[in-house]
Amino acid sequence: MAYLDQLNESFENAGLQVLTVNVNKPNILNQVRPYINKRKYKFPVSVDPRSKLAKKFGVKGYPTFFLVDKNGEIIHRSAGYEDGQEDIYLEKLVKYLESEDIKFNDFEYEKQLSTQKDVTINIDF
Image 1: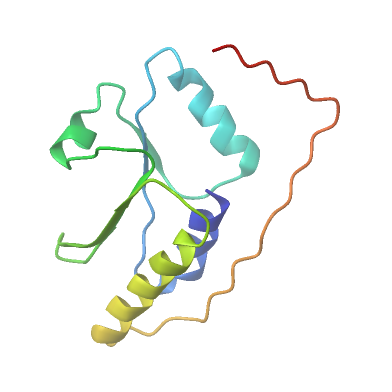
Image 2: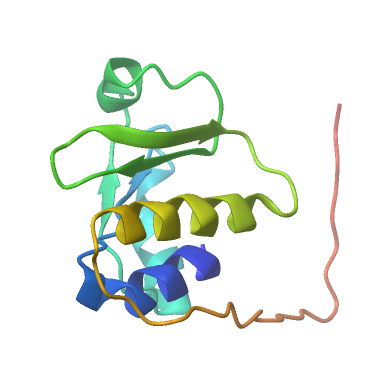
C-alpha cells in the first residue's frame, strides 16, 4: 500500500488517482480507517463489505489491481501479488502516459521498513 501511496503522489500531476477498495466483512471495517490513518496514506479508500463492486469487476482473488484510463477502459489487470509486481504496474502506467503524450516525473519507490518488537504470532489451523 505504501507503493500505491507513493505512486499516487508522484503521478498526481499526470492525472493518476489511486483508489483502493476494501472488501472485508462488516465486523472488520471499523479497523480500515485507523489502519490507513496510522500509515498516513493519502489516497481514498472505499469499502465494499458485500463485494458488489468486486463482483461487477469479476474479481477472483485479492489483491486485484486495475489500471483504468481516462475513458474508463481497463488497460491492465492483475490478481494476486508476488514480488516485482510493482514493476509491471509502473511499466503499464508509463506506457499509457507516453502513448497519450502525458508528461510525468520519474518515479523511484522508497521502501519503508517497519519493525515491531515483542511480537507474538499464534497460528491455529
